[in-house]
Length: 91
Image 1 (cartoon, one colour):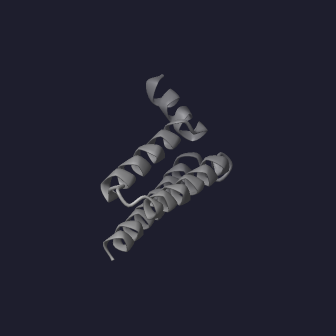
Image 2 (image 1 turned 30 degrees about the horizontal axis):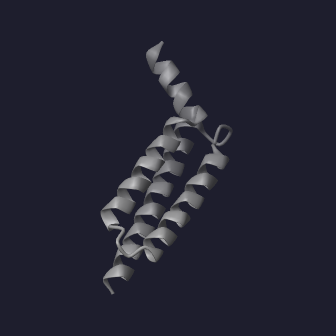
């Protein structure tokens, strides 16, 4: 039961972080500059992380959540709308 609750927690956090990423990218760049590829890779990464959590019993829930949060932040930093925003702020 404990393993199932941990896996569900990781899945919920992955969905929420992916939705936050999509909303933030749409708000910054609009529909014309939306990074569909990065969103797809974020979804695939979340699915892989949930499967790893389900398969490996010694993986902690906080490790999986932290890894996905860092993966989301890294993915967001290297999208075109965020780079354009940083350029605008710096100049």
